[in-house]
Length: 67
Image 1: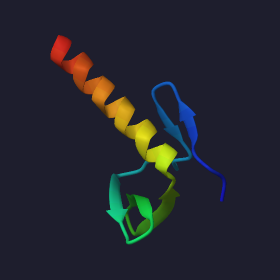
Image 2: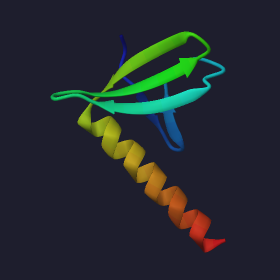
Image 3: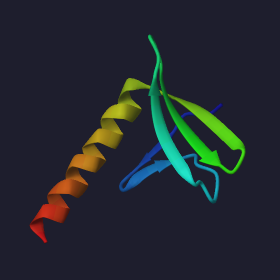
């Protein structure tokens, strides 16, 4: 499976019509889980992916607070 692509406003590699996105932490792995109806896709996240998502979320919070 290919790695995520870090984009200016998010990450790419998601299927269309995702209903739910969750994060699951195991002992040595972090998973991003995308759910649509009965279909569940699990994507392993690397440390760089987690940092990228965190940065984007903190940035978005700053933008929300500025309005």
